[in-house]
Length: 68
Image (cartoon, rainbow, N blue to C red):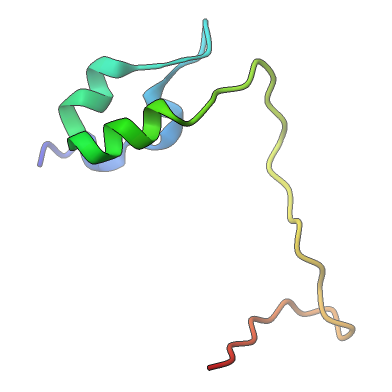
Protein backbone atom coordinates (compact mmCIF):
# COMPACT_ATOMS: atom_id res chain seq x y z
CA UNK A 1 0.00 0.00 0.00
CA UNK A 2 1.15 3.50 -0.75
CA UNK A 3 2.41 5.03 2.53
CA UNK A 4 0.31 8.13 1.94
CA UNK A 5 -2.85 6.03 1.76
CA UNK A 6 -2.21 4.50 5.17
CA UNK A 7 -2.49 7.99 6.67
CA UNK A 8 -5.93 8.75 5.21
CA UNK A 9 -8.84 9.58 7.48
CA UNK A 10 -12.52 10.08 6.65
CA UNK A 11 -11.78 13.79 6.38
CA UNK A 12 -9.60 13.02 3.34
CA UNK A 13 -12.50 11.24 1.63
CA UNK A 14 -14.71 14.34 1.60
CA UNK A 15 -14.51 17.40 -0.65
CA UNK A 16 -14.76 20.01 2.09
CA UNK A 17 -15.62 22.92 -0.21
CA UNK A 18 -18.85 21.33 -1.45
CA UNK A 19 -19.48 18.58 1.14
CA UNK A 20 -19.44 15.60 -1.17
CA UNK A 21 -17.57 12.31 -1.21
CA UNK A 22 -14.23 12.26 -3.04
CA UNK A 23 -15.09 9.35 -5.32
CA UNK A 24 -11.68 9.31 -7.01
CA UNK A 25 -9.97 8.35 -3.75
CA UNK A 26 -12.80 6.14 -2.51
CA UNK A 27 -12.87 4.07 -5.71
CA UNK A 28 -9.08 3.73 -5.60
CA UNK A 29 -8.90 2.41 -2.03
CA UNK A 30 -12.25 0.63 -1.52
CA UNK A 31 -13.95 -2.54 -2.65
CA UNK A 32 -17.44 -2.56 -4.19
CA UNK A 33 -19.16 -3.51 -0.94
CA UNK A 34 -17.59 -0.57 0.92
CA UNK A 35 -18.35 1.81 -1.95
CA UNK A 36 -22.03 0.85 -1.80
CA UNK A 37 -22.07 1.43 1.98
CA UNK A 38 -20.44 4.85 1.53
CA UNK A 39 -23.03 5.77 -1.12
CA UNK A 40 -25.73 5.19 1.52
CA UNK A 41 -23.94 7.42 4.05
CA UNK A 42 -25.21 10.99 3.93
CA UNK A 43 -22.97 14.00 4.44
CA UNK A 44 -24.28 17.00 6.34
CA UNK A 45 -23.86 20.67 5.47
CA UNK A 46 -22.66 21.58 8.94
CA UNK A 47 -20.09 20.03 11.22
CA UNK A 48 -19.52 20.21 14.94
CA UNK A 49 -16.53 19.62 17.15
CA UNK A 50 -16.04 16.08 18.46
CA UNK A 51 -17.12 15.61 22.03
CA UNK A 52 -17.19 12.92 24.69
CA UNK A 53 -20.71 11.57 24.87
CA UNK A 54 -20.33 8.80 27.45
CA UNK A 55 -20.41 9.95 31.05
CA UNK A 56 -17.72 9.19 33.60
CA UNK A 57 -18.35 6.78 36.45
CA UNK A 58 -19.14 8.22 39.90
CA UNK A 59 -15.42 8.04 40.70
CA UNK A 60 -14.64 10.23 37.67
CA UNK A 61 -13.18 7.43 35.54
CA UNK A 62 -14.63 6.07 32.32
CA UNK A 63 -14.83 2.28 32.17
CA UNK A 64 -16.11 -0.39 29.83
CA UNK A 65 -18.11 -3.27 31.27
CA UNK A 66 -18.39 -6.46 29.24
CA UNK A 67 -20.99 -9.14 29.84
CA UNK A 68 -21.10 -12.48 28.11
